[in-house]
Length: 163
Image (cartoon, rainbow, N blue to C red):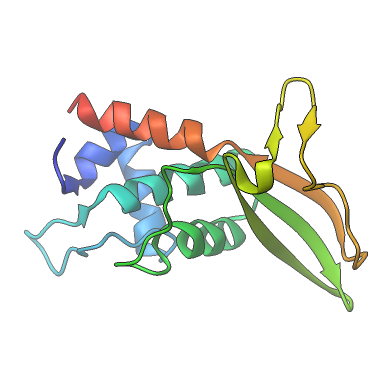
């Protein structure tokens, strides 16, 4: 698989209209590893950027506003560029929508396969181990959103490999 992808590669692989991706980039919601600087140059995305775009789109499709979706997609996937999370082990990202001291916010947890001997079967809701994703000892969150990042990652890799 290639290491760098053009804007055209990303829109083809992820099924996003080209102008929509450009709009997201122009507004700063999506930031490729190499930005297009002037006419005749092109932006380049790496694999982390592709994951970021896919997660951003997933969050938008789930009803998150663009600012929040961009903040958390960027923070999770490309926030520590050069030291990415071990994303091959992270299967789910849990977003807890919070109200803390009257301020709304979003907190995230990363659920790795086998973390604390815990696995969640999303089809049945069965849990094993000691981790309780619905427990809220601080009383600050009011809803939860789980993203199957493993599936997003696999779909992105598969789509990009076809280019």
